[in-house]
Length: 193
Ligand code: GAR
Image 1 (cartoon, rainbow, N blue to C red):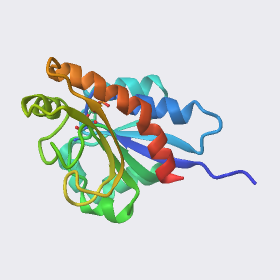
Image 2: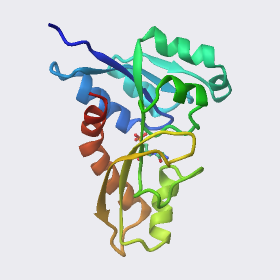
Image 3: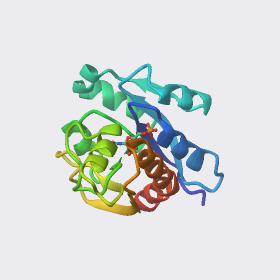
């Protein structure tokens, strides 16, 4: 019997390196039972748009205000038979109607060891700056389920990396990106399959 493919959507607001990594991992592996069928972004000019288009994945641009329109958003997702959502640098709060439609089926990656440096406004470079300014000797990544409170859903995976006294926020960022690229697709697959 042929196994059914699971279609997922990746939500991203920025550069899109994680989105690209997820697309390559799932969509170019003939053995994969997951496919990134749609990228959703709230920013039409985000780097992720170009990356997804280059890799042949459709992009839905849904502006911040439009996210309040449940019918519109769910219609976009249903059009691609989306069964789970992965947040890869997505800035907006996930609305309740998505949490209800996808219970335990929305996964986020956060660039610190939650609960450290989480919460509203803690995004990308802000997190790396906070790590350096706090004098932390280690940081890492957290992959977790999404619930109604920022960065507080059940943790699926964490791994750490040392922060050296000479490290700048940019140094921390490249260490974090290396960890993300190594672990994120595998943890998504293990969680969803
Ligand atoms: C990633 O480091 C991700 O962990 C972070 O945004 C970056 C996006 O990079 N997410 C958050 O800070 C969520 N609060 P990318 O656009 O190159 O994938």
